Structure formats: structure tokens, C-alpha cells
Amino acid sequence: MMTGRSGLCGRSDISLLKNAQLFGVVARRRYIASRRVAVMALGRRRSSYQGELFLTSADLPQSPGHAFYDRLNELLAEADFDRFVENLCQPHYAHQIGRPSLPPGTYFRMLFVGYFEGIDSPRGIAWRCADRFSLRAFLAIPPTEASPDHSSLTKIRQRLPEVVHERVFAHVLAIAHEKNLLKGKTVGVDSTTREANAAMRAIVRKDTGEDYKAYRKRLAKEAGMENPTDEALVRFDRKRKDKTTSNTEWVSATDADSRIAKMKDGRTHLAYKAEHAVDLEKGRILAAGIHPADTGDTATLVDSRLRTEVNLVRADVEIEVEEVVADKGYHKARSAGPRVRSGGAGRTSRSRRGRSGSGPTNRTRGGGRRRQTVVG
Image 1: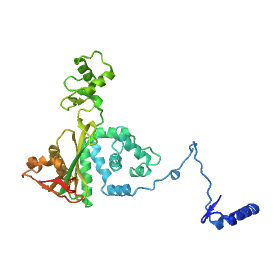
Image 2: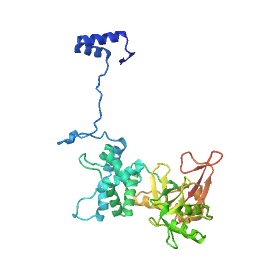
Image 3: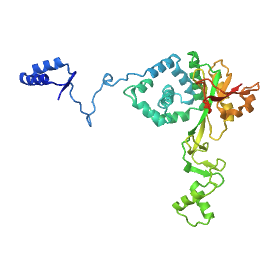
Image 4: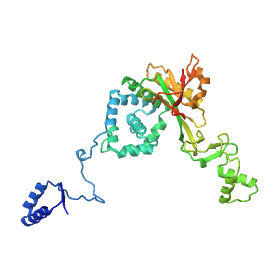
């Protein structure tokens, strides 16, 4: 049954079809033109196809572009970003020896992609850049070339020291300041826990060096169990009292800098503490640091304040941080007042009701917001 613009075909339509069959192609075309029905043959997906022997670049699919990444490339080109990072990374490469590496501008753009797309692994970043035409255009990769492999990201990150990445971060802050996207007088500080790339099964005792299975087996033997099976060890460990995994007694054999911590979803995992300082007026990230997961908020608050001031100085931006806003977990920061701002004694004040959307806050029972304000 055929359908047109007005719905199902009526008797007049059926008669027209019969006439079209009788009078041939001409009548059929007239019928189609009168009904204004778009004719399209059904396409079928090919399970396999033979590659072309010769293919010009004009025949390759082109990216329609991405408004955000296209505008970002314009800003980076205006600031001569590629020449800056190439001169910055030159001392860490050989002169006229070996094959050319991945351009530093492409490397840092791939790190930008990881941040904007929410990808935290080199494999994920490399896959996303290879999968999307708009990102290949952002990285200036020709259609005839393959996108960088994840191993290239890992090797370059190991080759370049941390200070290079910090200098690039400060350069981006300078670009933001030139575009009036940076204020920096009121800074919000907050932290979260991030899972480490290490499993709890890899932890070992600091005193004896035995892993958890060997430690559990030793305790079972001390309790009178001879040659216990794995199932018996599991039952014994489940009933055992005072079962704790303290950072003072255990350490990861694969990632010694990670710490045993309780995640926000209640799981216990090897983790780090990530803390960042944000310009509350413009939303720019001014500093970001990674700390051991068992480090207190009061200690990391001082570090984030200092990192912010160092980054602003590196960016050659004449901005002085006047206020640091944090949640109630930082309430002991008043004891670190002189360290927060050198040359003056800081003071801590509490604001029972914070401004809407003004930074890291936590709601009280009455619906208001309680936050901690540290004035340097």
C-alpha cells in the first residue's frame, strides 16, 4: 500500500497506478510528479569491499569542523603557541639526529583533548583522536597519515619534565589573561580522591614484605590451622577481628606513592588526592596538584595557594590573590594563616550563607550554604 502527503492511497490513486502500469513509464512519471513523492532506492550495506588502487586527497572525506576546537586553534595560532612549546621542548631532544618526534604542539593539543573530552588515559585519548575527523583537523593531521599512537604520548610525557608542563600551563593562563578571561582575586579550593593505577591485591607488609595472602595464611597458622585451603582462609579472614589495612603497615608493591583510602562511593582503594584552585569569577583553573590520599586538607590548602601564586608569576600576570574559599573540611586553615600569605597573619572567617554558584560549598539542613573563607 502506498502513502502520499495526505495519507493512505484512495481509489483514485489505485486507478492512477493501474493507468500508469498500462501506459508505461511516461504515465508513471506523471503520477510521481503529481504526488510529489521522493523516489529513493534501498541501500544495502556491504560486508566487505575492495580498496581503491589510486585515491586522490579530494576524494577523501573531509571534516565539517568543530566550532569549539576551530576557535581554540585560532587562539593558539594567534598566541604562536606551537613556536613557544617547540622552543621550550628543544633542550630535551637531540639536534639533527634521529627521526623527528611527535610535534610538541600536537602532543599538548592531545592533552587538551583529554581534558575537554574527560579522558584520563593515553589509550583513550589516542583512540578518540583517531576516531573523529574534527579532532584530526584540530591536531593538523593530514588525511593520508595515521594519528599518533598512545605509546608516543607516554614516551613524550616521560621525556619532558614536570616543569615544562607547568610552563605551558602558565602560558595558557597568560593567553586567558590577555583575552580578559582571568581575574584570580577570589580563588576556590576543593579536592577529591582519584583511583590509582594499582590494585589492593598488590599491597605488601612494610615490616615483612609478605603480600596479603601470605599474611593471612600466617595468621591462620598462628591460630592453629594446618595447611588451610583458600576457602578456609577466606572464611577465617571474614571472621577475623581488628581487620584493618593501615597505610602505616601496608604499601603498594607497584605504586609506592599511592595510599589506601576510602572513596566517595564507599569502596576502599589505592588512591591519590587531587586538589585544584579555581578563579571563582571566571571559572579558570589556576593550579592543580596531586597529593597522597592521606594528606590533610589544611596541608594541601597551603600548597594550592602557593601553586596559584607561582603560576600567576610564571604567566607574568600582576594579580594578587585576595581571598581563598573552601568548604568546612579546611576549617583548621586558620592555624596556617602566616603561611598562606607571607608577611602577614591570615585570619579565617565563616560565612553562614554563600553566594549562589560562588564556589565549593556544602548545604546545611536549613537549605543555606556554609563555606569557609580564608583571607590572606
